[in-house]
Length: 270
Image (cartoon, rainbow, N blue to C red; front, side):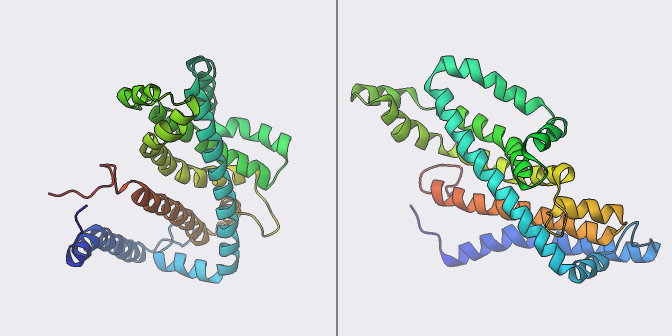
């Protein structure tokens, strides 16, 4: 693989990050100027400076909420990966099982989470357990669906070659089908990691934890009820930053795992 000169790497970095950074600064500046000119009250439309001030004043509570959110989202995300990939391997192992079970995975995806969340709270109690399960349910389907598509897309000639060498079904799955499905699995990870953050917030709206240990969803609910709009914005932006961080981490893993052999991450030579 051709090595990229450091100067070219720096140019690519600047081309990738400078335009969105400039757009961010322009939007924030316009937001600050327009809200100052219109003179809206902070509880109706806070200025960016109001949001920064609210975040600074409530920094301890905000960090507690963010850490709680990280814990819930990561657990839900990991459950989505383990159960989603394992389920897809089982479905891909037998067409009969796939035809019998996969429709129910689709049905589970079509049921609104807010409709079944109260049942989850009744079964598992109000708290972290229910929130993690709700985060898992929202992130589960992209994992099982993408992994199953990847496992079923294995090249036929390669499967015939493995059969020619009398490879067992487990060897074909472990040494051929799962590695070939890796780009699809990572595509599922990119969707599921952000959905797990959304799922944790939805879970906290219904099963949120009080006593200063709630996550961002609970903090948003409390801030909304008290008309603390700047702090509400700070919580929402923190959730967004958390989702972006998860996505960047998965993207870094994707680059590490695929850049040496898959076109989606290989450098273009144009």
